Image 1: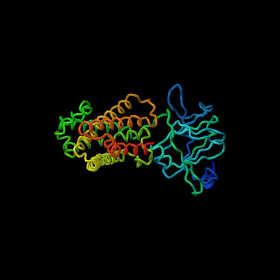
Image 2 (image 1 turned 90 degrees about the vertical axis):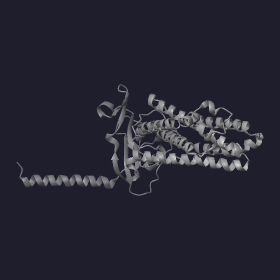
Image 3 (image 1 turned 120 degrees about the horizontal axis):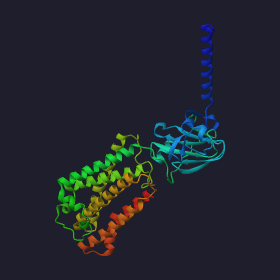
Image 4 (image 1 turned 180 degrees about the horizontal axis):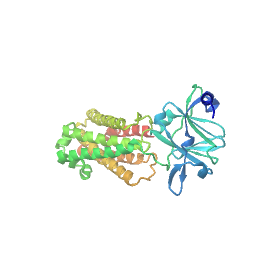
Length: 391
């Protein structure tokens, strides 16, 4: 038996040793030139794909020592303002969300700015895969904080997407709740404004060139009934925009769209904010038509023109939202390709432009060149500007 004071002395000495060792590691740092403080080491977080289970499982050295591809989820939302540091002892390849991004050179650190990754991918976490030499010792992945701002950080662009395990996010719950909200708003309009609902959602009435100008839906574009249907269209458009964002589909070139705290309450707030912007844009469209109609002396066709815009948009965007929701809930393994919605949107606007041309020609005797000039300003130029931002 050792004296109690001797046991306490040894314990104290060991504690000092471990504290000094850890302090030394913090001083040494990680990354290029040891210029980063380690925040998190992903060594124990790696996963490998198991063919038998058809899923990703935790990496176990005894079972997976020969695996050349190791993957890990990186939480972007909780690590804002930090850096992601990656290094391999031998040459390898870096994949983000199963898309090849760059070649990793042996013993060279790659420093990725997490804020830039968050702006690019617009999701709380990404799925990172390192392919190279087998084993865990070959790969090092850290979240670090720079000791200085001298290191130039790499910003990646998300140019392509492919199959990857999809983590559950706040979008899944919101899209389900949002669909119920849209069903409720449509049921409300159907019950209280039954005749107007049947008129707005009538494909036969849409393609008819004989518009009923005496209808209150046409000759009172800013009536309370029309405003309610316009607001409902704004809800549908906002739902589609957030749906597109959740699937990482490119519709707008600006990737800073709808960035925030990434929680459920924030997403609801963004939904109503986008709805408000869409509503004001639709009302602004009517103001533009009134201004241009006065310049071209086409005041009589403006109410019909605006009604056809609302009618066609309600039919198309509501059908599109319903179709995308059906695909999402029934085809969970579908690969959502970038720009896959761009062609349907362009096709819709071109078809609407042709329909408006025929409708206005049937209502007003006007020269083709004169009418084409009017439609170019109010329909074609906004479409071209939209495509400029989409592409």
